[in-house]
Image: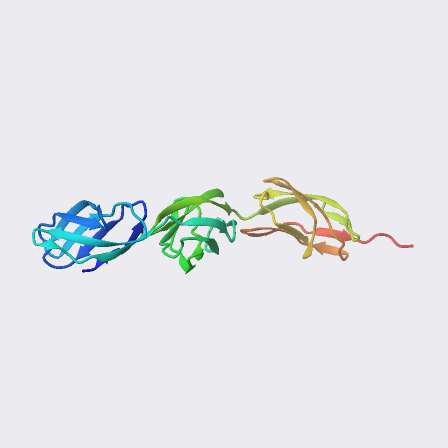
Length: 248
């Protein structure tokens, strides 16, 4: 006599279907010693019921006027605990895969990012991988994992839109570096790096539309300024020009 699903939350509330024979006129379903609720006789071969709260493994029995069935095992599963996200931000378009660590993750069936769900791949009881779905807007969203034991919240993932560069001031500086450059554009508050012709530059985020950077040393000539964030890269519409100093 199988039961599906054969596991559920320690808090109860799992709707199960019990299949067997001679199940007509079922009068009770018990999980161990506790009675189930909402017992419904679907047919002579099928009964549905909602599990009570419990722990560990219990035997589920069905009682009819003809007697009580043999017990079939049902496993109570605790709610998952999430300790960390491997990656806490990514592109608004989604599609990147992240790792979630915690405990009780082996029965995970879905991960929600601000209400948009994705089906995970379970690596172990303490780890799962999931492809991040596309977000509806840039910014933080709550992440929740649902398992047979319930749903747990408490982590945050931030959707990031692509950066954009509209202007660079000044547009030239010494080949020895050290020029203070103001970069204006869009979505700059999540900037992770700034480069001049591929060379990393120290920078500071002023706000979502402004960065301050200091040019590194470079060869005379034009150099693309590239701003990168978790969503991707933006290249300055006008390159920065390195100018060699005079010699005598």
